View 1 (cartoon, rainbow over the protein chains, first blue to last red):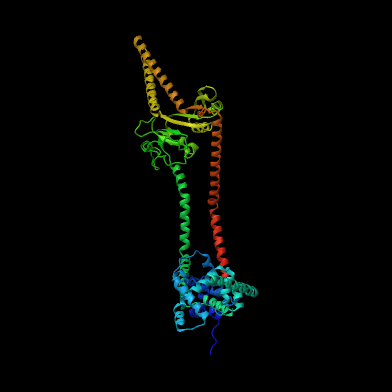
View 2 (cartoon, each protein chain N blue to C red):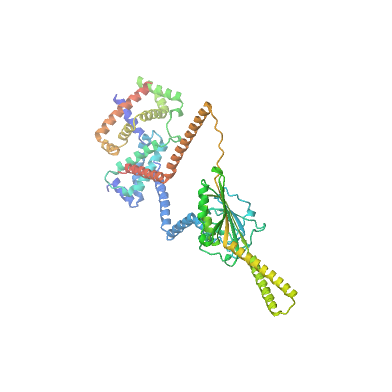
Length: 209
Length: 402
C-alpha cells in the first residue's frame, strides 16, 4: 500500500500545474479551515466561506513561492487567520441568515427547554418524557449555547480568542498552534490558561444571570 | 468541575468544527484566479503587440502637439498678417479696456492677401498676444487716405515693418504724408517733454515744429509737434511710447502720389509753354511793341505758375520726407478722494473694518496655501498613496506567506 502524498508534495505538484493536487489539499483542509474561520468570525458561516475562499485564492496565487521553510499546514492556517483578521477589521456586512442569533427563536421556548433540562439533570431521572423533551429542544439549546459561547469569545481579546480556538481546533497540537501564531510555546500555554479561566468566569456569570 | 471542564472543551471544539458539507470553495478560487490572470495577461499581451510602441509614441506626439500647437499657430498667424489698410486707431489698453466694436466694424484680412491688394480686411479680434489692439475704419466709411498706407508699423511685436526687416513694397514708389498722434500719461510731464525733444536727429532735418508746456503740478500738459524723417517714424514712435503710458495712439497716412504726378505733369507742360514763348520771342524781333508786351506778360504768368508748382512740389516733398508726430503728454488722472469722516465712532468702525478685512485676508491666504499644498503636491500625494498601498500589500503578503 502506497504512502499518501504529504501536503508539501501536493503543493509542489500543484505549482507545476496538477489540479488534482489542489483537490486533494482541499479535501484535507477545507472543512477544518471553514470550522476555524467560523469560530474566529463569531460563528458567521458566510464570512467564514469568504475567508476560506480568499485563502485558496492566495494559495493558488503564491503556490509557486512556497519554499518549504515551514510546514504547509502552518502556512495555510496563517493565511486563513490573516484573512479572518482582515474580514473582522472590514465594515460589518448585513447578516445573511447563517449566524446564530438567539432573537431568532422563541425566547420562552428556549427558557423552557433550558429549565426542563436543568431540572432533569438535577433530579437524575431519565424518564421517557424527559428524553422526548431533550430530543425536541436540543438543537435550539445548542444554538443558544453556541451564541453564548461566541458572545463570550467576542469579549475576549483577539490574541486570547485565537489561542483558545486554535488549541481546541480539531487535530491541532500546541506546538503547531504556537508555530501558526508565531509565538513561543510557553506564551501559548500561558495565554491558553488565562483565556480558559476568563472564558469560564464569563460563562458562569452568564449562567447565574 | 471536570464535567464542566470537558463540556467547555467540547463546546470550543464544536465552535471550530464545520458541520455542513464542504462547499468546494477551492473551485471558486480557481475560477477567480483564472479570471484575474486572463485580465492581467490580456493587458500584457496588448502591451506586447508590435504596433503598441508606435501607437504610444503617436499618442504622446499628439498630446504634445495639442499642448504646444495652439501657441505656435497663434504666433504663426501674426507673422502672416501683412497688408494694406487705410487708417487705424490704436489703443494701449491691452485688450480688456479696448473699445471693441461690432464685428461689422472690424476689418478682416485673408492671410493670402497680396501686398498690393487694397480690398483686404484685417482681423485682430483673436490676436490676444498683440501688444496693442486695433480698431480699423469701417469699409463703408470714406477712407482718410488712399490705399497705400501700411498699417503694420503700428504693430509693435509682430510686424516686420516695425523691426525694419521688410521695406514696404508699396510705399517705395509712392508719396505718402505720415501723421501720427500719441497721447501719453506720465507722472513727470516735464522730463518726458524734454526727452521727446531729444529723440530728434537734426542732421536728417528733423525738428520740433511746435511745442508748449502749460499748467503746473498735476495739471501740467505738454504738447509737441515733431517733424521726423519718414523712414524713422516707427522708431521714434517706439521711443516715445517708452516715455509714459500710452493712452491713445492714432496714425494716418495721406497718399499724395496723384498730386505729385499731376504737379509734375503740369510743371513739364508749363515749362514747355515757357520754352515755346521764349522761342517765339526770339523769332519775332520786328513785332509791334504791344504784341511784345503781351507776350512778355504771358511769359511772366507762365513763369509764375512754374514757380508756384515748384514750391508746391517742394512743400509736398518736405511733407512726404518728414512725418508729423503730435505728442500730448499729461499727468494721469488721480482718483478723487472721498472726504474722510472724522470722529470716535468712525475710528472704531474703521478699526473693526480693517480687522475684519485682515481676518478675511488671513483666511483666504490660509485656504490658498492649503490649496497650493494640495494641488501643487498632488503628484507627491499620489506617489505617497501608491507607496503606502504597496507597503500595505507587501506587509500583508509577508504575514500571509512564511
